Length: 417
Image 1: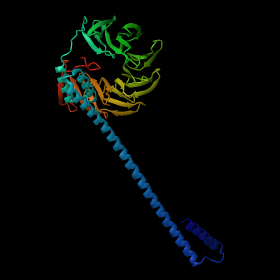
Image 2: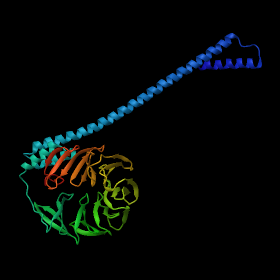
Image 3: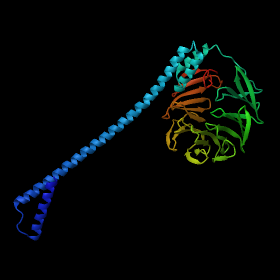
Image 4: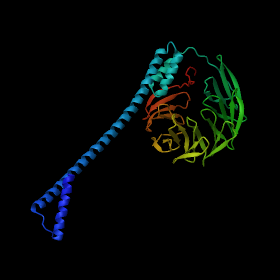
């Protein structure tokens, strides 16, 4: 076709020159026919080439659409497979727990705990718990006494101590030694509101009035961290080298030596603070309708803006997502760069706190309820704590009663209650 096009162009050039300058010899009829036929052939060839290009483009576009569809389908299948694997593991642990409940009830309890983490709302698993606990004979009730009402009981991360906080202005640390408990008193002039333990179990902090007190080793007081306002809470980084205390409109970031203090400032009351799993970032939640993400030096990285008070914020276990709990009865999920990924369905009550479960779902608290949401922001189930403080009702997303039981709290390893 290139040869025909070239010959046609030369013939047309000769014809045009002869016509404009009246040169002889004049183009013959054969030459005129050649030019006309060649031009028609060129037009037809170009049309055919355009048609081939269109077909090729359509094929490529169709292939890309099919490839995209297959990728989405594969991703869906992968997520479905992961969920099915979670359920299968939960059922395996559940079946093994049933098998061992007669001969090894403590091991059965640990297997139940694993099943419960993978599938928190499962009536069969709940029934297994009832059966196992009913058949446990080897337990020894121990009285952990204070001079006034006890407000909080929690296990330490190393699982060898129990912390109790009372209205008698003390916290007591009960160390388990040869099936007996010895108490250490953490006294304060004011009421102790809460206690925080470092994940490695090496340090603890008691929160009281305008201070947070740090304890280590044999519960020796090593530092007092002061605020101008009431300290609401304290939280440690994973290795306990950093601690954030929350009070009024500021959170304070303290290093291990307490010589360096950085203020994490909001324009409203700071409600909570949390470290990322790797300890490199901190997220704070405030009544100024923001959650702020800071690096471990206290530099502001990202501001997550909301239209309502932010009651709490927390990182996912991989540190890639952040969930915020809002007074407007919703939760929001953000990626690590601060981009909003989803807003949940509206709950019936303001949401006080939110956290990620290991399976990617989100658990929230609101007054007498705890709710579980899937990773698309849809409500899965609600745990309703009846005001008698003893009974828990499990409701589906439509509010229908699924189960009702009296809750028990396990220590981390699962063989003490």
